[in-house]
Length: 84
Length: 183
Image (tube, rainbow over the protein chains, first blue to last red):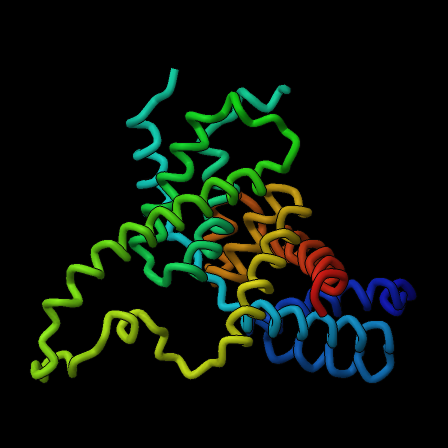
């Protein structure tokens, strides 16, 4: 059980919790565990801050992507004009 | 250069989103943007032999795309000269808008903000290039397209915990890269 308190292990889990929370996929208990860990762990607090910022920056950029169908259309258009 | 044997499909997967955002910032119309990208890929494919590898592939594609965008605006402008005569300013349907007003983006963002966001978008794509292909694909699906975990796991045949490990690495790399480039 001693390994359970290995801080590296805790930080690793916390990193995943933190990522999940960025996508709104964090369960209640995971959220609670994360909050408790954050009280004690400075490096995880820093990671969380950076992680949040990354989410915000990507949201702010408002990237538009092509749907899969649209990409397929471009591909088939290209195939209709085979060079060589 | 060994680059001459390129698979166009892979190429499209890799660059279409970047080129799409680049174009959208300039023409503001999805359909037009898609056409311009297709034409760019076509021209690039034909000119493959001329690609010296001096620039990166993306820079090269962008230089072709830029010419396509300029051509597009030339065409639009010559059509506009004709249509202006026909606009009936008493017609209440359209409220007598000039074409320029119709084209103008109505979102109340100022121009500076827009330029900043365009640059940010491109910086994000440049950073995505630094991830490996699989990482980039998964990160993009999850973060930008908002595809749910289950769908991604099925498509790549991975477990959710695999997915979160990949996402974690990708986020760390993206954060570091954007911090250098942007933040």
